[in-house]
Length: 329
Figure 1 (cartoon, rainbow, N blue to C red):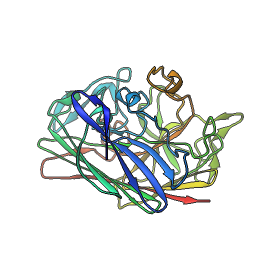
Figure 2: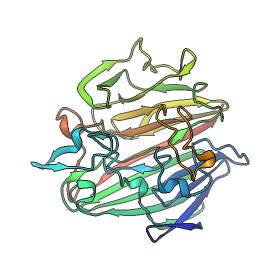
Figure 3: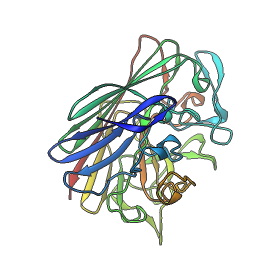
Figure 4: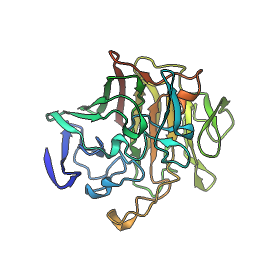
């Protein structure tokens, strides 16, 4: 574990390196960021990541971060929790995105435990943070076994609250300018219909014959351009045991993504490219430079009673498991 020169809100920042005989992974305690994934002995980063910590102090694209306490959007930044109406931080137009401006991905976690193959990180989000009730304790464990990277996310609260936490890594396996040369498969035949701001109508749409159809492996290309996607794939109606839900391949690398969650937000990165002077070349990557695969409860679920719900109560535990199972093609 290496202490970094930069601090965040007077808290020390660290880079933790995990290694196996097949892969190396770098994790930051800032935002529990997944900074780097590489095959052993190779320089190419399989995920989008900055080489220094400073860009992560802003991180407009949430690169590699753990986001929440509610991943994705909440309509009009408001919802009922346990019969009480709450207003949250409106950081995406009129809506709340990824838990507000100060998402988990911009908070420094405590490093509780670390070894060659794993690290355990902890963060306490106070009662009322970004408008959400209840103090929320969050534990994130990264574990590297061979070519499988596991992410175990647990949380407990002292009052009824919303809890829907996920990883926000972007992948690019080839180093090409965009992910148009990659292939994707998702274990879902439907997506949620959304308006122009990404808010679900409550209805589903069959993907067959559309640009969103990845029931079998398909290129992330539409004509001469990368396909534009920022939609929730309806993998199941509720949370389940850990099971494969998506496959991404490019160059000589493939990953099988497994999760316990009912939805998978697929985002091909059209909005990447914000000005960020501390980043290389002053840009936060560029549009379509990577694809984010975000397993989660469906967006805006508190305002759609028929969706699986994200309510977490005292004495219950939130537990989201993710596995990235890498193979060489």
